[in-house]
Amino acid sequence: MSALFNFQSLLSVLLLMICTCAYIRSFAPSLLDRQKTGLVGTFWKMARIGERKSPWVAAACVMMAVNVLFLS
Image 1 (cartoon, one colour):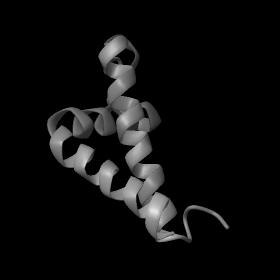
Image 2 (cartoon, rainbow, N blue to C red):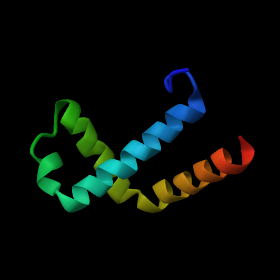
Image 3 (tube, one colour):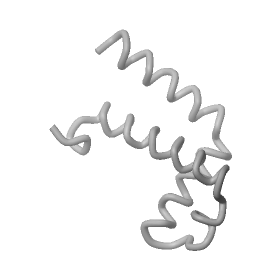
Image 4 (cartoon, helix red, strand yellow):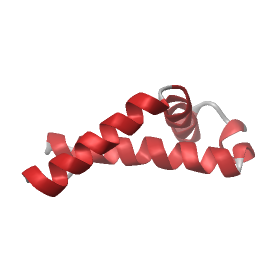
């Protein structure tokens, strides 16, 4: 089943993308800062969300991990 049709999988993919984009931007900011439109712009926006809302993103990652490990 695709992650688009399963809400839990969709949330997992979004959280992983946010964390990955923020991590990539911390090591190589020029990769995501060049273009702020299109597909690369979407990655730039995810990196910004990961940087600015990092306590909330971290809490969501912990809750998703507990859900996947112990409740699924």
